[in-house]
Every structure is written in structure tokens, then in C-alpha cells.
Image (tube, rainbow, N blue to C red; front, side, top):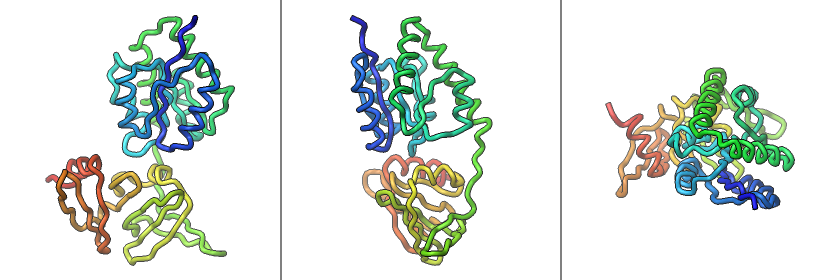
Length: 260
């Protein structure tokens, strides 16, 4: 009996994770050995379970699919297939370096092809170092050309009008389900239907910092940071709003902004 392909799934969006898991469970030669809802969790799961294949969402907050790969030790590197919404630069880089990828929404037949490729590579006893070098080359190629154009204004529809909100005037962006609440320096509030992680990729990371899973804040408009017990913080913005900072982001905040 041929051993089943051991797979780990990593996607911060639970519906996407459930959908992919359902597709995989339809295949008798596949065993899902772990699921992760964040990049950090993905690293731990991969290192603990030692899967044959990791299906990594390319865009996850705090630590994305590329960040996961960079944190893995070469000797623990499984075969990698990135899962992403269409990105011409990523697709080109992955194809050029023979790194597999799946476009959302994932098609069952295309997933089957990815699984077949993984099984073939394992049967050829492909060395992990070869896999690591190939994925590393793909990431380097991708990042060398995928220089993002950051947004200067965010369009917000209000009835029959579209308000163009200047990004430098944004104090914070807070997620509530599928909605994002934008607050400006002047206290104006706008709501858009957009995913936070998708908007985050279109904002200058030097200007906006993630305070927690569902919050972004304008670095220039953080007036004070208060330390709380347990190593977390509260960010106090120039408009008086107070936003909690997660433990992970508190550490990043201290390293990036709270040291001379």
C-alpha cells in the first residue's frame, strides 16, 4: 500500500482553510496532519508534524507564506505549494523556479495535479536542500520585481458619490468581520467592504503598523504607548483613541519604534 501524502494547510481565513481541507479529504491518498490559522502557527505545525507538503497562503498577516518558509530550517523544509489570489509576479517567479502554486478559489483538478507532482518528487527522493534552494530562488525572484505601488487615497462609496480619503490622514483601520472602519485625523469615519490583509499589502509598511490581528495604525499618529502587565501595550493615538496591541506586535513595536 502506497503511504498517504502528509499535508499541512496554512491560511488565516477559516472558510478558505475549511474549503481546502474538504477538497483534500476527497482524496484517499492524502492525510491532513495539521492546520494553521497564522504564519507563526504554520511554522510550529510544520516543525512538529514534518509533513511531505505544506500548502501556504501567500498573504497572511504578521507572518506570510514567504515568511514561514524563511523561518523553517532547511532540514525541516517540506515540499511547498503557495496558495494565492492571482499575482502575476508570484506566478512568474514560481513557474520559473518550478515551485508549485494554487490560485484561489482552488480548483479540485488543479489541486490533484499539485498532489501528483509532490508524490512524484518524493518518489524520486528529491533532496530537501534542492527544494529549499528552489523555493528560495523563487522568493528572491518574486521580491525583486514585485515592488508594490502603495495607495495615496482610498475610495469610499457614499450613496451616489465616491469620497477619496487621503491615506496620510488615516489614524487607524479596524476590521469588523468583512468591514473595515477607517478613522481620520479630523475624526471622520468611513466604512468599506475589504479584507484587512489585502489592504495592508497596499499600504506603505513604513507608515502603517499592525497593532493586532484586526487593527492597523498610522505610525506618525501614535502619540503615546502605555505598557501593560504581561508585556502588552495600549497605543494612544493623536485623536485620543486607545487601541490594544497584541503581545507579538508589542514586541515588534518595541523593536521598530520604541528604541533610539
